[in-house]
Length: 236
Image (tube, rainbow, N blue to C red; front, top):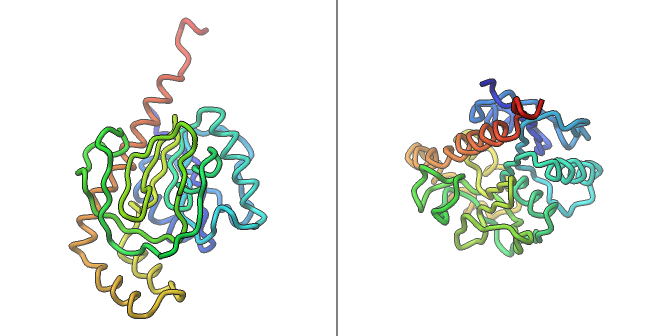
């Protein structure tokens, strides 16, 4: 069976880290679109789509956000599977009718998340697992009919509705990205920045690598979905 063809919707204003991280983790043929440049797919000729993180908020008034939402909405209506990561998680929630709001506090650094234990996205992942987080918005109300599949004390860290999956954390991050993103948080006190940097260790990174299983699980779901949708001889 051929590798799945996936639209990589890169929401980073500086896209290189996302490009490197997702191309390393996703064993698929990726067609990348740099959203902040207004680069949105013109067709739906893909097996699935992945929406990355971004410094943007889903409620910002930037020219590229509404066209992105429109494409995502139509792709979801066409039963195209989605995986949203951080901003992508929030974008999917917003498009599907949920609520995304700013937080009173910033979640950043290696932290513990717990999954519900009954989602295929987390098969092979311990119920409590380590992830790198960095976000100042969160999903405060799930879309109608959506299921929360992961959470911690900051709120929802994973949900599913039909063929759409979202995770608030960053399973794709390497340590270089974690350090660079943390050093760029000028809005945080220097003491907190240094505390987070002190936690970017080989031990924490190795622990967080368990969460990378969500990529393989999502791709397995995409392959199964593609097979189920494939025409049979009786359809000819």
